[in-house]
Image (cartoon, rainbow, N blue to C red; front, top):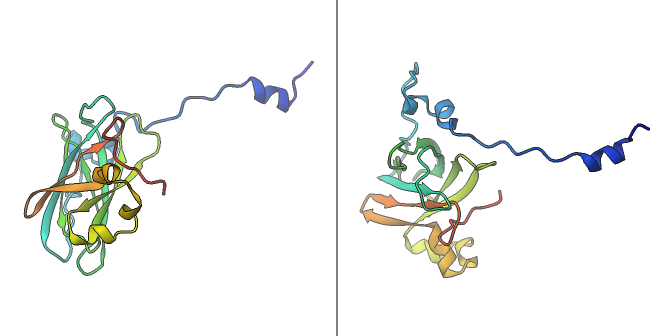
Length: 177
């Protein structure tokens, strides 16, 4: 007897999901992996109107170890409201990522995280400490302890630190967009 589609579907197992894998940075930021490119690879510098600033941090896995092959994309508006985009790879030894950009028109920058073990990139925001944070409609809906996972900490006048935790007690808030 030949099984029909309804019987066959109940016997098949799901296959494992595909992840970005350990080599995603080679395809998206080849010069970081010492692969020559014909064009300048300055994707981590966002030029736009406004005061220059740096945003840096480390992506940590659930065990608290740096994800040294993470890749991040940043989306923001400059002081004139023009959209900016950039890409930065984590340092292979320390896991540190860094964006050289301008202060955003909004109180935050949007970040996408691509990393091994992450099936679909993750969306989050890095809010800069300003007076506008209390009025933000997204932050105002969160408890103080969860809200703190979205706040970039000032290191000095033009440098902010924003660490991202993929899992665990310090897990960063990720948005379903």
